[in-house]
Structure formats: C-alpha cells, structure tokens
Length: 408
Image 1 (cartoon, helix red, strand yellow):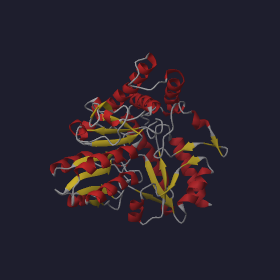
Image 2 (cartoon, one colour):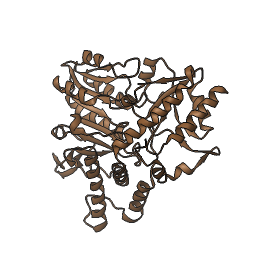
Image 3 (cartoon, helix red, strand yellow):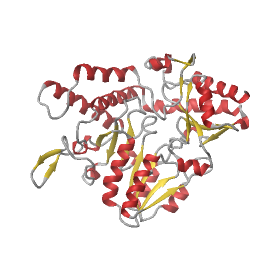
Image 4 (cartoon, helix red, strand yellow):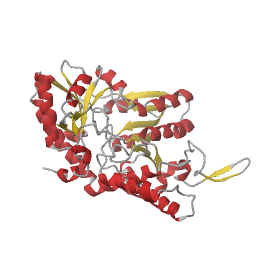
C-alpha cells in the first residue's frame, strides 16, 4: 500500500532524471542531505531575482515584503512543530549551530561543578562535542546511555544513570546511523521529575515523522533545513517559551539590539534577539516552502511510506543470508528509513564505490558517530536512507546491485 503518490512526487525532483555512470540515479543518501523539489528552488530563485532586500530595518517596499516572507516562513515552521508562539522559533544555520547555541548559552549559564549531562552512545558528534566542551569549562560530567544489542536505546541504563545531578539530557529522537526511534515523551517526563531539561536533536526526525513539541513535553529542539527538502545553511532552534528569557544571545550585533548607550544596551524581544546580523533570508524562505510541501503531502504519510520501503528492504536482504549484516532494530515501527549494513568480508567504502557504479548513492564510513562504532566494534558501515521520492523500484535496484556485488 502506498501512502504517497511517489510517481507524482518524483516529477518535482528533476535530478532523478540524471544518469550516473549511464545508470538511473538512485539517491539513498537523504540522511546526509535531501534532494530539493522544484517548488522550493523556484521560491528561492524568485526571491533572489525579483524580491530580494535585507529585512526588518528597511521602511521601503522591498524590505517590508522581504521581512513579511521571512516571518511567514517562521509561522509555517511554528505550525509544523506545533510551537506555542513565534517567539520560540529561532532561525540558525543548522542543527550543529543550534546545538552549540544551547550548550554555550543555557549550558554555560546553568551547569555547575559535578552536575551531569546525559547523552547516548549513538549521538552525532554535533550533539556530543559542544556538551563536552562546556562540561569541561564548568567541571560537569558527561554520562552516556548505552544501547541494547539490537540497537534500541537501553531504557534501564537510562534510569540507572539518571539522577538529581542530571541537569541536561541531550538526545537524538532518531539515530542518524541505526535509525533507532527514541521514546522522547517518556524520557522528558522522567528528566523533568529530577529537575533537568531535555534537548532533542531532531535532524533525522523532524523531516520524517510528526514532531509536536508541546505533546512531547521537551524544552529544546534543533533541526536543519537541508535534510527536509530545504536549502543548506538554514536551521531552527525551538526553545520552550518559559526558557527563552533564560538564555542569553550567543551573538550580539545589528538586528538583535533595541538600543545602545555608552554603558548598557537593551535587547529586542525574542526571537530576534537571537538572530544578530543579516540572516540567511532566502534560506529561511526556502525552508518555509519546504515545510509547506511536507505539510501538503502529510508528514504522517512520510513515516508510513518509509516503513513500507524498510519492510521491503528487510525482505530482500533476508535472501542474502549471512552475506549482509544489518544493524539497528528489526521492527520498522521502531526505526526510521535508515538501513545501516555491511557486506560480509568487504570494506564499506569499497561497497559504497561499487554501488556508485550502479548509479546508487549511499554513505559509507562512521557517519560522525565514532562512539557508536567503537561500541559496535566496527571500522565503518554502509548507510542507505530513504525519503519521499524513493520507491520500491529504487529498493529493487539497490538490492539487485548488492546481489551482484556479493556474487562477484
């Protein structure tokens, strides 16, 4: 059963008509960066060619219109994640930027000696290194929640490591490697019971499944535009309203200040106090168009579509027996559309290169998750990741190519 009109969707992505080594392009690297539909590209192109101006400070017509489009994009994002108010939605340069902002503002302000920050062993480096840096500055400790052998989060280990010393829990809602889905709502409830706050890395979840920040009960959410059909260099930091006034701006300058005197200054109201300098205006407008596109097809349908592709992939991989080693949960309802695997006896980079000879784009290596690979005792793996423009034909081409590689 198809939950998306994939053949219609594919028409919005002309790059899929390109040939790679005289083969049809099969793009299976959306976890790294998604393709962009014509609708998003055209919105950005129109703005840059015919509507461009700097925003907020101009009284002339072009500036006023540009400001309106920029703020309309914020409104779309607010609705998409069910934020309580526009003041909670801050434009950043991506997930990495957003996570650094949280660490170096809220973290630096609130962490004290011997406090604890709880992460997981499968976090992306962007959700590890800022916390390690700030913890080192403040004399706080980092603890890591382990995983079970099947790739699911070990909630018993989480409970064991959670304590009243835990001030911040920062965790990916979806692992960028194993595809593991985390029960964020459950974790948030427990963290709040011990007086901590919850930061969610939504880079791999917001583009693929419904994320309702109010329902989840979290405090911070970070995600990127380029993983959800939008431009690069744009992202979002959502901050729960009662915490917005508790974090100082990381950057100060034009666009963030109401008034400056010789010995003091006053900030603008949020979110603008956090967006000093000229922002990525066209990027924000493009992200607004991407959100509009996803809302039109239905984000719940995206998740169900990927589940169907994963079911078919598992079915095909079963035919390879021990020749293919798959990592992560086997239940597709507990994972995203990410397939992490190795071909027995083959270097993952060689497998990635061989798949490229079939026109198939996958990602090989350690995927900015070295701690996880140490935990798995692996030097690397191959990652295939699905999105709205992938179909069963793509999976079949992918599986058939692997079959030939294994035989050869």
